[in-house]
Amino acid sequence: MKKVLAMLMCLSFIGFISCGGGENSEVEELKQFAETMKDLPEKAEELEKRVDRSEEIIMARKERGDTLAMNYKDLQKYLPTEIPGYTAGKPGGETTNMMMFSLSEAKVQFQTADGESVMNVKVIDFNQHAAGLMAMAFWMNGYSREDDSGFERTFDTGIDDVFAFEKFNNKNGRVEVTYSVAYRFIVEVTATFQKNTDLARKVLAGMNIKELAKL
Image 1: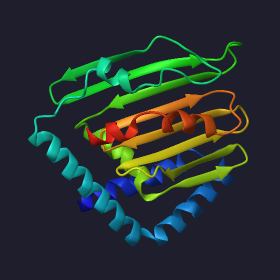
Image 2: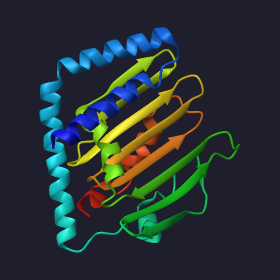
Image 3: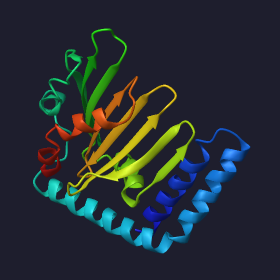
């Protein structure tokens, strides 16, 4: 468990120093990271609880023989069929199973009548894919970053075992809102020419995330 936590903290550090825009911004990011490190014991304890919870859920799936990602056609049932002001395209996706690797993705694109704004929605099933779980774990302890170009931060979904992360670029209006669901699924909404993340959040709120979390 300690090795897992150490790796997650390293990922956090890499995340802070890899997204800067120059020497000054990197210095500020390192200062933010130093502030975060002050709360390391509390954060590590909470993160350890999350990791234990993920192991509990994964073991329960294995015991009932659920070890492969769902077929992409089954995942498509969880995609939204309409978004106000947008026209839906044809859902797509794919499923890959190979040795110890199982991954499935369902997706659909929406577009405004003038073609200016495009919104993409994806549901990805990692199932037992450890790398996917590690990527999700970064959000579980809370994170936020803001500058003149926009922000990125975690937020509370109000749903057990569902964690959320959002990004907004106020210069080009690009939005990305992502849910990590039950240590298995990633549900992502990206959109262009937005004023905020409200619409993307509404799309996610209208999807059957609670049912996904129970799988």
